[in-house]
Image (cartoon, rainbow, N blue to C red; front, top):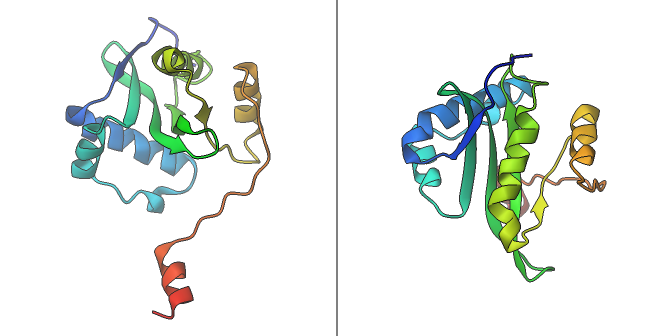
Amino acid sequence: MATGPTPTARRAGPADAAVVLRLVREIAAAEGDVSDVGSDERTWAAMLARPDVLVLLAERDGEPVGYVSALRRLHLWLGTDVLALDDLFVRDGHRDAGVGRFLMTELARRVAAEDLVVRWEVREDNTAAQRFYRRLGAQLRTKVVAWWPPEAQRGLLGD
């Protein structure tokens, strides 16, 4: 557990693409899904320029220690936008030091004025994350996530 100065948070922009991509690869490796990362630095620069993409970087002494990423999208049932949280990641050596809570607080600070619901998925076996999110006041609901890759779609079409 790293201690030290309170982290700072800032919105990542296109110039941060390499840093964000490195962090995305770190979380993918930690989850055993590194082959799932198909984005590159150019793709990240374009995504970080979009107003509907929000990536907050937590930094200590100018070094990235974690991030939270989300995408603003329309929720048809609610008839309004929601924020779809994609990742919350804290680097090794900085976990259990309040960085995750700090990032979630910063996310709330940026969306609370609009009364946006924030939605995300958490792995069923990640009970530590579930406890963390419950302590923040999140409601956890059981749901199966379907993943329909293009090759399976083409199989259905006979292509």
